[in-house]
Amino acid sequence: MTTPAEPAHEVRPDTPHPPTAPTPRRISGAVWAALGIVYVVWGSTYLGIRVVVETVPPFLSAGARYVVAGLLLAAVIAWRQGPAALKVTPRQLGSAALVGVLLLVGGNALVVLAETSIPSGLAALLVASVPAWVVVLRAAAGERPGRGAFAGVALGLVGLGVLTLPGLSGEVRIGGVVLVVVAALLWSIGSFASGRLTMPANPFTASAYEMLAGGLGGLAVALLRGEHQGFELADVSTRSWVALAYLVVFGSLIAFTAYAWLLQTAPLSLVATYAYVNPVVAVLLGALVLGEALTWPIAVGGAVVVAGVCLIVSTERRR
Image (cartoon, rainbow, N blue to C red):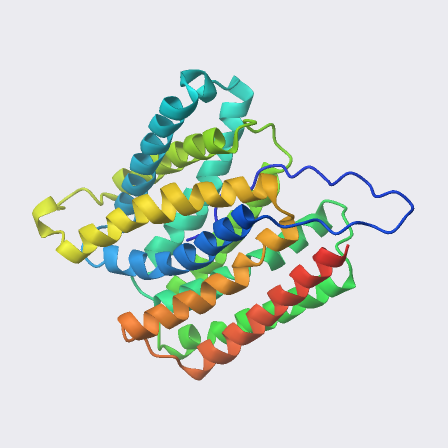
């Protein structure tokens, strides 16, 4: 998942505009490049996950993916910025670990588990409901997102209802659908909480610790589930190895850190647009590469969810 993303760090509000006409904030080329990475790479990770779980247990693959990516990112940080860049306070480490577990064990690993029984495109469309859940959490915390945002939430919930029809009719396993809905909610909680916790100031350092915590958490769940029993590396297919390597390097190391950088550099409303681009990429790739059927509940429900997310993002951008 990318899910669908990944970490959401504190975003400092822009300096209040003077009484004169506001000056539009210029979006740099680096921001657009990072957005392009998140758009395309995260959209493709659903396909990668579906290929990995063909021969690798879900939590074992998710845990290994993030431990390796976290170690690689930590090594790059120490090499480029010096070991001191990895130093954090116990409170910052605890916050990063909590966010990492919520995002990567609760959010991403549950999506990996779900993709053993449902199409990758359907999983991506269900994950697209994350912005709607964030609006609900903000409202519960006493914020006032606005009528447009609530209208987007209502649309998103209708879309989710349509997307669950394949599970209710028996076309796909309803358990997989429920898992992704729970994953989206946990991802939203992690994203929402991270802006209110004391996180490491360096977004790349925070990402490294989040991936390590999430990866170790995923491996712990894999052991509890007994996924290691009877598992042999020789049984892993070549395409699963290639997909896992892609997820580590591109999905985690590159796209994950690009997202973390964007959250501290670009307007949050612009960053949030990934939520309705990723599902489109995922559905297209699932249909083209894996031959996943584009049924009417997926097409209609997905369109309604994406429309709701667009409404939420456009409303927040005007605020």
